[in-house]
Amino acid sequence: MLRLNSSRPGGDHVSVLKIDEPGEDGLFGLHILKTVRYKGVTSAGSLDVHGFDVEALDDSRLRFWMINHRPPVDVKNKVLDANRLGANSTIEVFEVTRGSSEMIHIRTISNEVISTPNKVAAVGDGGVLITNDHNTKSGNVGYCGLSGCHIAASSGFNFPNGMIKGKDGLYYIPSSLIDKIRVMKLQPDLTLKEVDVIHLGMPVDNLSLDKSSGNIYASAFPKMTIMLKTFGKPFEVDSPTTIWRIRKSASGYEITKVLEDKEVKTVGGATVAAHDLKTGRLFIGGKFSWRYSSQK
Image 1: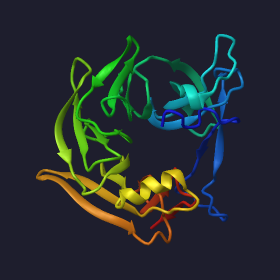
Image 2 (image 1 turned 90 degrees about the vertical axis):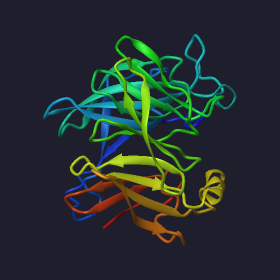
Image 3 (image 1 turned 180 degrees about the horizontal axis):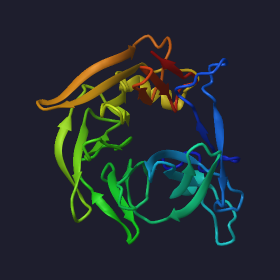
Image 4 (image 1 turned 60 degrees about the vertical axis):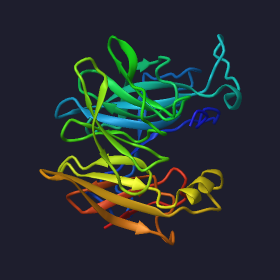
């Protein structure tokens, strides 16, 4: 992921869906949030977004923590070759008023701890945890707060990916290469300690939290060898998808397979699934998929 989006002109944007209002066109009121007070490294205002998290500050305000794979630049802000140098990744912090069409830039976090960022999880203390999906030790998790950044956990990972903070306050960190979701607790010294491990029988890319129920939904790769081929040829090779529900109970974790498309008829190459408790819909998307859907 070191070079993801880091040399592409134009940049990304954040789109919003009104998931309880499909509308006559079935597009769920799809619209784009305009960035305000954000310039970027070249003053063009472009974003190259990867993972992000949203923190509710109060009833009306949301804080967005976003991984931005900026292009590398020289001292004169001239864009350099990202294929050779890699991305110039940061965490961008925005605030959004509910119902607004704008996201206000608050600050940029730039630090060597943010090395190969994949996903962030807001801590709630003005800081954020970051999964670095690869390095010489197969990845780590960093923490950045108002006083600086440090490595919160450095061992036992293998391509850590779509981390979330659960309703129980624990952090759930999947691996895209092995069958392992680490359950970790943030310690007073802002390091992470493993308290449990969840196995689904296959690697998991991203997790999402249904905040109403506390259930976690996992988008997994049932055939990793095919998924690796999809990475290189997303328009030619479709990868099967499996979606799991993880429900925490007094006796442990209840694991349920809620969707599987082995023949890749509908949701090939899915890397994320989000559940809407009100409608029962699963919103499914894929970084390497040319099709996406919402399923009931």
